[in-house]
Image (cartoon, rainbow, N blue to C red; front, side, top):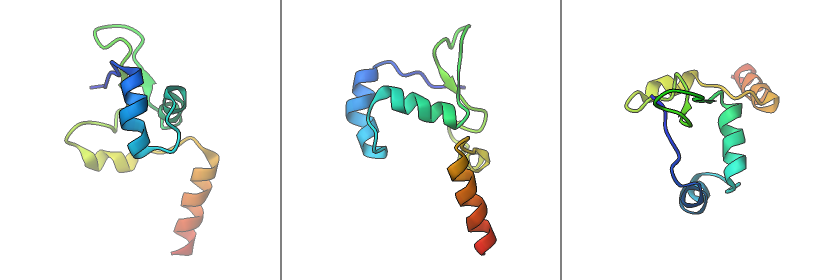
Length: 83
């Protein structure tokens, strides 16, 4: 149920520039942490990243994800109050 990053260098040079401003691997892992992804510490999926609402084929679950960043929470709350 998680995903594994097999080649950090390829991820940083080919994938991250398409979707993020910061293209360094440590910045990406910090983003994963802020979005409540956990790194599997033991078992068959050792080293994989997992989030209960990030599942292939179940895009509707993603709306339940949130960022731990206080600025993002404030922006979402203020946006809702403007409507």
